[in-house]
Image (cartoon, rainbow, N blue to C red; front, top):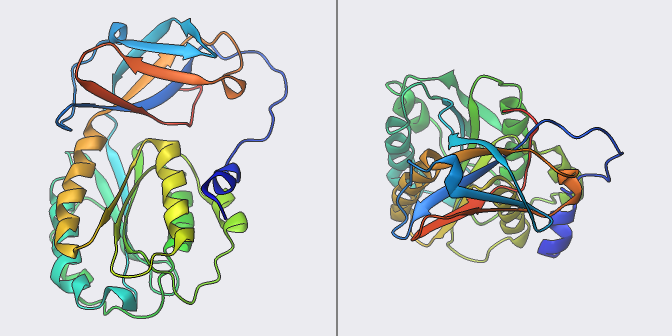
Amino acid sequence: MTFAAFAATLMLAAPQAQALPDEVVISAVVLDKKGRPVLDLKPEEFVVTEGGSERPITRAEVDSRPLNVAMLLDTSTSMGNTYNADVIPAALAFLKKLPPGATFSIWSTSDSPKVLVEQTSDVSTVEATLRNVAPFGHNAALDALVAASQELAKDDTHRPVVVLVTSASMAGVAADMQALLPKVSLKPTYVAIQYIQGPEDSRLQDALRVLVLRTAGLHERVFSTMAIQAQLMKALDNLSASYRIAWKPGTDPRQAKIDVKVKRPDTKLTQAQRIATTW
């Protein structure tokens, strides 16, 4: 399946005519030219256009809601010894760097999704739990994405994030993309770190690209598990640089091309494709 066809499975059905909301909200990540978070932008430094027409911005600020992270770790046979040697230390380093107020859960992806650590903010006992898991079975990463996203979608008090650390393989899995992806909630932001150690499964690659594009997340491919930790730290920078930007719509935003830009020089903005009508 091509990327374009794959992305189409997540497109919204044509909406029916209705009154416009008072404001529309979109999220965007802003980094400087060195990839560092830009955290002091003012509303007047953003420009939002609908179908080429500039719209008045009502508010814009860094998204400071506490995070609720579902961390999905590939515990399949394909990870082998690298799970204990590199994946666990990288996951622990990431969790310890989460900002104050954040909570997390940890899932495994062997054969079927399983919650290893229920939602908590305590990292102290996590390592023992993770080291009690021996890699086995195939990689059910997509099923885990569906389950974790649906669980996070129930949380209205945090900013949900799905972080997947996975190999590039789903060998032996006959995943039905058309059936699975419409079940994935787009409420969370998606971070995916893929470890490439052989032939890649394009189904998984395309799924991750779609989810990251739609939610202004991060998708990185690494060729050594020793590089996973650095990419997870990069993900924390991206999450800290996420803004919410609201404007008064002039037309149904689901039917117009929305473009967000930032005026400040030497910055780069990556916008999400999802929109909301509540702050």
